[in-house]
Image (cartoon, rainbow, N blue to C red; front, side, top):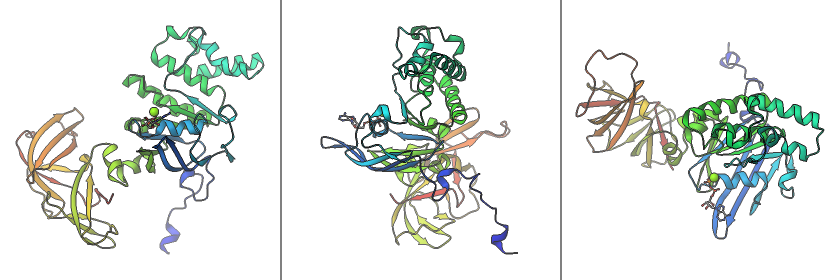
Length: 384
Ligand code: ADP
Ligand code: MG
């Protein structure tokens, strides 16, 4: 039997839309720029978003997330480039005629209206029959678990409850595309987590396409089907959460998402299925189990996540992929411990280890001399 005949058959049903070749995007952003005077807030962004995605725009403050979202909603016009939603070019379509709803960072509820009336407001204005309005409002309030508080006014609600009312108000009009700008920003950690799951559930039930802006990488990792990482007005990587974490395509993404140790070094060999990097901070070389298609002697950064490094009192038997140093800090976090180690070169690295066993032996502690090691498939080489 040939190898190809036993390889699994990938059907389009199980594969997410964005991985399918030739799938039609629901939103197509093409070479969008937005300048304010001589300042470029959004720089040549191209992005396809597919139906039923929960797409997160993730980036630091001022990276251009809100500006991009506002252009999707039609509150800002691009300086150049185009936006196509559901096959229609939005250039000359005003906000109120787009199949889009936007929930703002400040929820902007009407203070004198009840929860119910706040949610019904938009539907009434559209002139829908009052029976239908009533039914749809009741359904959506049930869905966001606010049915029992329908008669309250906004000042009688907690921050999290107000947030759910605002969400209900933007969902009740059944937009094809819902844009949320830092929707969970005002919530405390626990409520935030609950609401994240609620958002995912609602998205799943209603089949609306969501674009969510956040500066919180954990939130993006939890919520998103895919993440677009923004920096200085550009999208620097678009990928699924695990890819963004495991295979960052540049240094900014590696450092922005989670913790990472970066080792600067020179490429000394680069074959089809192996490569080696000479680094002053490590014992031996950094050896990789894949080629990297670099120029000879190219300077690179090698990224290794803290949880992918092992720490021990004894050196590993391997010649490469190891380092030694002294523990300078230990933080016991219950489920895991974090160690900071100063290598012989003086470089500080961070290692996290799960505490999978109850303590039996002697714990590693400050000033212990330790050896670090990692596998050939644990590091990512970054050339930019
Ligand atoms: P983010 O939402 O990622 O924090 P924004 O999209 O709000 O960032 O802003 C990106 C950059 O564009 C910021 O430096 C901001 O000051 C600037 N900017 C946004 N709107 C305007 C405007 N109307 N006039 C001038 N500069 C603006
Ligand atoms: Mg913003």
